[in-house]
Image (tube, rainbow, N blue to C red; front, side, top):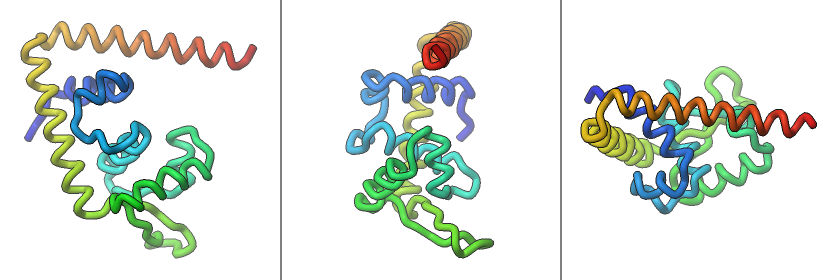
Length: 149
């Protein structure tokens, strides 16, 4: 099903607002970092990542990335596999059941986003998301500036 590109942006924005975001999706048994990792894996073409990639992408230490992956492995959501080109590299990927469940959940979230946009108005949503993206950029700049002082 083809979704409005604004639905993807809306979903990304909702994921950054935990109070609202948790009401927007039904995967409440997962923490925000767990959901973010599952969504990231779902979006990747090859569907797998190394611990280093997870650590860098989420700006967390390798031990924190390992703990995150361990929690999802314990829930039966992720599995470890060897890299096809370099057997020394361990990658993590979603299990087939988890991949199906996440795909279905993403479909439901994007469909809900489409309905929200239809009610709110496409132009209004575009304007709102642009403003929120600008606000996020300003906040990130402020945080970076504070860190250098």
